Image (tube, rainbow, N blue to C red; front, side, top):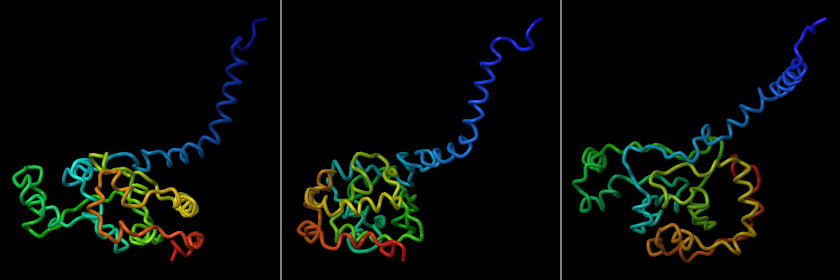
Length: 221
C-alpha cells in the first residue's frame, strides 16, 4: 500500500510547527524592534534644511564656536538657531552674491525668518534647560549632539530617552574628574577656544549635588 504522505511530509510538518511557534511572538517582537531602528527614529539621517549649511566648513574649517551661533544655549533653556542677521554679519562681505545664500539674503531684506527643520526634540512633559547643562555643569555640545563639525548636514545623534539621560546624570560625578573642560571639548570639534566667552572657559564643572538630579521632579515638572 502506498503511503498517504510523501517521505518529506514529516520534515515539512515540523518546520511548519516551528515557524508557527515563532510567528506568534514575532507579531509582537518585530514591531518593537522596528520602533528602535534608525529608520523609525530618524537617527543618523541628515535632515534637509532651507539653506545648505555645512557645519564642517563653519565649525571645523573656520573654527566658529557653537555658542557664537547658538548663544541661547549658555543663558536660556533653548539653544535657538541663529538669526539671519548673525549669518549676514559675515556673508554681507563673504559669498554675498552666492546663489546658495539667496534664501538668507531674502530673509534678511524681507524680515521673514528662515524656517529651519528641527532635528532634536524632547517630549512636552520633559523640562530641559540648556543653560544648566552648558554653563552650570560644563557639558560639551558633542555629548548630546555628536560631532557636528564632521557632518555636512546635522543629523540626530542621540535618542534622548529617559534611560539615556539618567545614565548620564548617574555617571556625571565620576566622569567630571577625567572629562575635559567644555572649552577643550569644543576645541576638539573644531570650535576654537578663543571664541568661547570667558565665563565658560574659566568655570570648572561643579560636582556637588549630582545625586539630586536623578529625582523625578528634576525633569518632570
